[in-house]
Length: 469
Image (cartoon, rainbow, N blue to C red; front, side, top):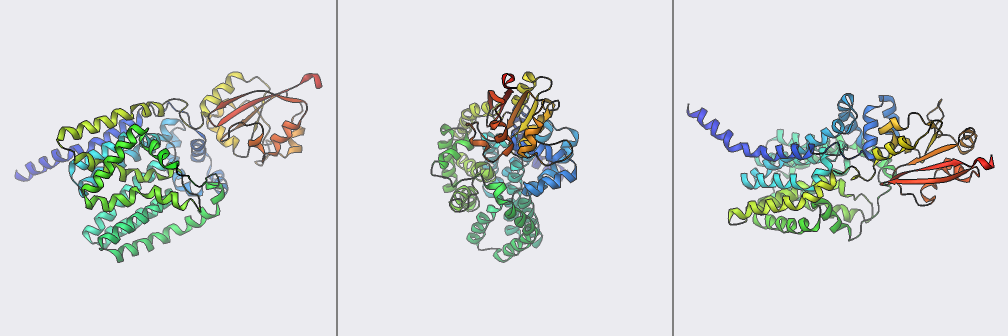
């Protein structure tokens, strides 16, 4: 009888731990289908649904570092390639991360601090943004939380089984996103400060290295395709990152104060969370020589900031001030959450582009995809393109036409939709490396009638001048 009462009491004392996870599910599913897929998500959708042979050929060109994520996504794509199905893994990962933050906060500070940290995490617009993204960033974040918890438990319990679990989590982390292995630097600082388990920590890293080395080799071989677009960040990247995490400066500044308060309040938490939270600074420093910095690549550091902010809120007195502070953070993030859920909130509005093309297209129209991945970006909403004659790829092969072949294929075509993703239309600058588009622009029989932007993607309509025919 006494044992039953104890277990019931334990369940009642732990149920608040689930509140952030439930909140993460609600926030993650709120408006998840409203924003259009953008170009990166379109690659996820097609990679998850294409035959394995085509997938391996795709990975030969780009995204080997995302291979595991594409495999995880395939069962969801088998159900549907719509926004809900393909973004659902990220929602579930955010739920798991929120719960893991609560557990870490409980272990390192107190149950209330863990609860507050989980709620702060869910409230942050950056978390919400990538909970609704068919890419691996939310999953990477959940694995980073798991990895940190396993390290804390391994050092506390001093058992090899926990270190083996930690090594396995690092392998998983690396295979989901190799650049997230920056987390190891934070963990190394933590272990060095504790002066416990240093040898076993080193063994775990060696074991993880064996599992990650093949991926690291593949990542280096595709470095230019994967990261060639990145530039060394300037000092302006610091406030920009704050705005992206918190939504605006009105949240970023109070959040920073709470993070500092949390770090000062509890040394045990600070030893774990401060190095972790400062990984964006390390990424910016590395990127001065070897650009790897992108805000979305650093989502896995946000749990550390939430842990520190939760501890900062928990330190406020009187207690009513704690909950008032949390309510204020939530209220100030609402505008950013609403913006995230608008149809054109992503870098590209591929759905809007497809609908516009469908409305304006005519029988006999053709399409030319600029750069070799143009068709990949557009294909996620392929109904709009299905009836258009493809001038980029001949029907009997999977390599693009050459410029002379394109010129020959223009015979009998009067209207051509030029479609591209990822570059703003600025005269012809975006097409300097696309011989087919240059050939079309040089053709005296065609003139550009109109263009329309959909974020960073756009289409242009080229029409044959019948007076010259």
